[in-house]
Image 1 (cartoon, rainbow, N blue to C red):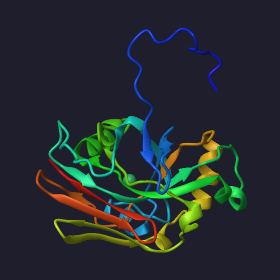
Image 2 (cartoon, rainbow, N blue to C red; image 1 turned 120 degrees about the vertical axis):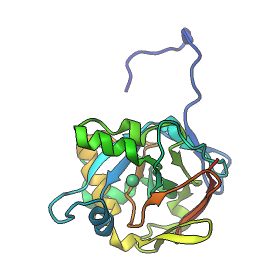
Image 3 (cartoon, rainbow, N blue to C red; image 1 turned 135 degrees about the vertical axis):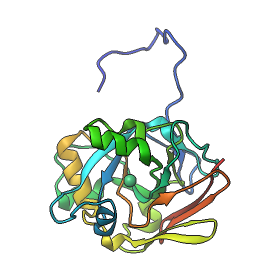
Image 4 (tube, protein in one colour; image 1 turned 45 degrees about the vertical axis):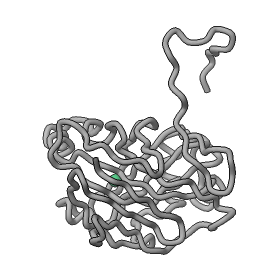
Length: 236
Ligand code: MN
């Protein structure tokens, strides 16, 4: 993509390691290119956030790839917020890129799936919404994307139903199902690939079911998508 090359020249400042996640069953890691997130993809969550799911189609935003929190690592409570929410999500891991991908071809572009948390500084996101400003301060802060390992399609196929759950300190807070997604995996990939050129290594967080809420330091979040995987994240 980039016509410039650094080969033989190095970098003028320290270059960061590319973001990546473990992949189940193999030594090699899944390299993370971009993290796309779908907004309001479960009707019940759209309603709890004060929107009419019939009138507002899903939309996209991004979290920076280096916001990923590796499996098993604690989530440091972020600064400048007193209302940090969990959003448990089904995650699509793209293995083959493309643009203008047809719905019927979309699943051929999937390497695998994972589960993730779209951690959100809800107070800062709310201010941004009110003022018509971008969402980055609410969505794309350090460690705001705790993720599981990526599980290849070869191991689990393409799950279309299965519980999407999140508990805090053992108490069930979110209890949705993949079959409640307004835009399904193939449709999300197809639509997104009309807006952006998808690349191997892209992750798509597909939205959260109802029941989002705040966490505090000391809480432990346990989330899962049935048939895909789970994660446990302590808030410190
Ligand atoms: Mn979300």
